[in-house]
Length: 485
Ligand code: ADQ
Image (cartoon, rainbow, N blue to C red; front, side, top):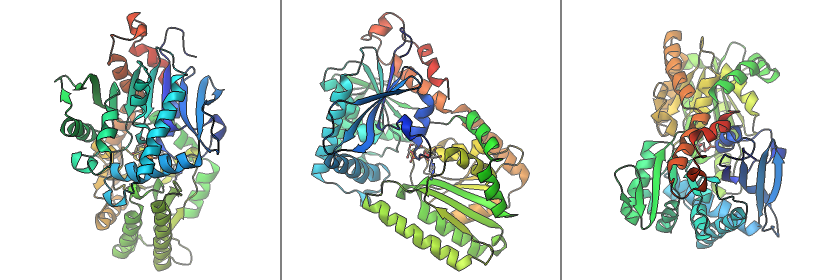
């Protein structure tokens, strides 16, 4: 538990990475929060397990002073809540892929009922002074469900995906009801001003919420504050890890296998939002157009399989296998395989070493809330001889990382041109760009992300909190939060 005088932080996310599962793990949210939670905190959510008769009470375990409270899902909850409404309706919609939205009423009902169940289980664990921080699109209605149970704690919500304007959001069945539940939070956070502004347009145009002119909005009796709070990484720590990992066995094996060749790298979850097809296509076009790069560059794409029980993900996997085979069949020589494609997750530490070896990182999502790989790549570089980041203009990261080579991820020719430019860029230009990118990544860290959000949550309502009445809840209360970031 935290100090007696400090508000306890309660993080809620769909998937709780249990201490027993440490190791290779894809997913930006899990990575950022692992760094942010400190002894005394509670992390609540789904265990990742499916169970024919899930208990209503959460299972508790403690590790390094953090309590993990998890509940299992039944098979039908899993299909409706997780594979269904969350990942077949909300995820494509929030990534502007209306054609991929697959909506079923029973999925929506499952989504709402799992959120109710989560709220009922969490409510029993809450102390009156807890600060509750709910994460991501699976759990949008959770705050409203907690309020319905009489919970008066300060509750914040952070949306890790993009957020669309009314023209997109209106395509979601029950959009008004879902949006309405977002207004039950005290603070609603987004990575960029574009997403925040889109949310504001939605609540004003679709629900009639009104601004107070000082950043807050009112809808009937509820007052909420939408904020911009870009997520970041532990830049210093990641940089150190990369420098060490470069000397490790895996990085040495990779370097030996490359010989004198340059390395381009892509690291993603295997997801249609990540622009993998266009990226592989672009690499083929580079080799077709600029013959001088043949045999002199290898592209390593690590794409950890994810959400395989959603049709679109299986189909994407098959298409990637086809295009990878096609590219290698066309351009391979007996001693050079241009494209190395692996779908197994790679340990974070190993990845850090690979990033450091890579002359180019291709981060070309078609839409992405932020994209932490872009930041990890910059942090991993050797400032004396840095690589070049090629970044999609539709990643949230592009708002801040303007010194990357910014591309339209839908245009494979433009990506190929950017690769050529990166492969032929002078050391001086690489250093200049990297220097500026580095300043940004070191400024906008995971630690800052947590502090900014929790400061807003702390400020959002002083009148009703017993802790603030005694003056005990202040920004300094969160200092330990960042202790191990
Ligand atoms: P994700 O879509 O999971 O996160 P991202 O931000 O790139 O995307 O985070 C991925 C994390 O997982 C990174 O730390 C990366 O190193 C790791 N990872 C990715 N692929 C991996 C692989 N193949 N093997 C091992 N590790 C891998 C969501 C949103 C993003 C947002 C984050 C955080 O979609 O836009 O940046 O949340 O808010």
